[in-house]
Image (cartoon, rainbow over all chains, first blue to last red; front, side):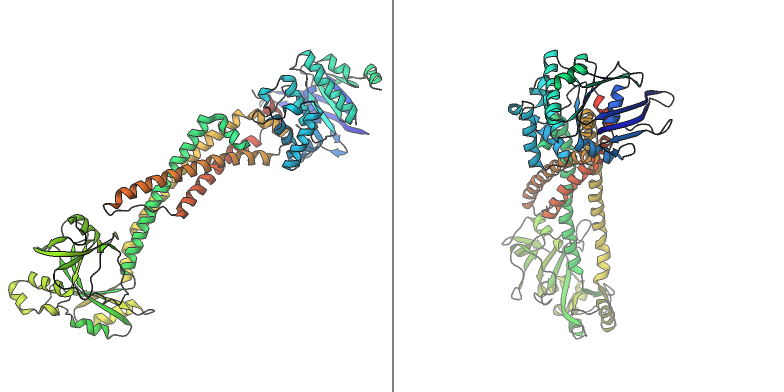
Length: 241
Length: 385
């Protein structure tokens, strides 16, 4: 079954009254549950925009072409209110960003617990869940540290723990290895690969990094707001199998 | 705890904002305390006259002045509970009260004639007059006691005679502060001696009375009794308490207006500084708000976090303001106590109101920046540097 089923996704960003950017010109994409997929392409190809739409951070254009569809886990998300989209993000999605994006005043454990609280978990349960999530990325001993006191690789693993804490169906990564040296990048990629295999989370990564693409089951290539190729990475799938 | 950590991120700015609210609340507390005291003085003033009928001569120097015998006529009227005959004599022999405002008066009366219905003044020193007191003894109002620097046991010169001071009263901020209470017979004699010699010989001191305080029975219409008195006692003018209340209401309104004014100023100043602080911290935290929104923090929750933070600033400012106000009130009252002017009354209600005011002010001021933060586009906020 497909976790994500989207057709005719278009997105125009208005920069001023006169000028606008057509970031997505009509994209169809479907992602199976349990897949690990990379979206690759040069800057300005629309890959981040696509991820923002699939992550319900933005809504696709409704006018100016065929009516888009965006089914996420069987729910039509094209016309949901901000409140409903926020709730789906909280409960069914986990986000990992290029620049880690942890709340600087909170400890690692509090950062992770915050996401659990947003999903409706009580404070006490959120704390327990945060500790487990941190342990699953190998950071149990860093729970009390603030982001400033952690290395880049550690911060990104905290961010992955935060993405995992609500056991979401979908984990979205926007250049998750982009700010890391190759050793740390491989480490983070390994964690993502492992949670996808072991726990069955669907993982969707936007990346420049061919190594990340190679580690995924499938690569969707984009250029100028369109999908230009959609290829299964046979070698890695073989390894996985 | 998380909240305090947020506030301590920018210590100087938070401190200055809290200071702004502290000063506003401090002013509110001090002025409210002053108003509490003034209002209680004024209600004392109202109590002094409330429900009474004051009967005086229709013609102050008329040919047929009212006499003490009128007291019995009035006392016989229906609905009259007590009649307190008095003799009012100017403090100065030349008839002036000295200075502007309320005249200094020597008031002669019969202790207990009001049957306990009159306003009971509180003593600062010594004791009140009793029916057994005779001759040149006096209980002084607070202004007189202060002016002549005497307390019970001292002496004071009135009409060139040395009076023994047997007591002094606490301030009321009303007429009794400038009254000197003496036995009725003493005042009658003083009054007679002020009359022109020819006239004085014809007057029997014991008949003299120039004011009657009439206390109606409970539930009786003072205005109606006043009319009856004027009809019964020749050349008399009877005024009920209602007229006095109108005069007294004015200062209360002015003071309340001052309090509202101070509250408004502190609202504007304190509120603007909270808005400024919160707007700056929202800008500073744009990215963080983007993160929270992206990982599923609802708009309502973002607003709640920021409004709570602003409310905490207001609460801390309010508590500090009340504490500082309390220090000023206690010090000022200590300084004033020696001269008999205790001017501030910080009630628990005032303190609680001021703290609540600061907190709510902070929260309201936080709403606008918080709402702005909640409306941010999470993607744009995440890219914000």
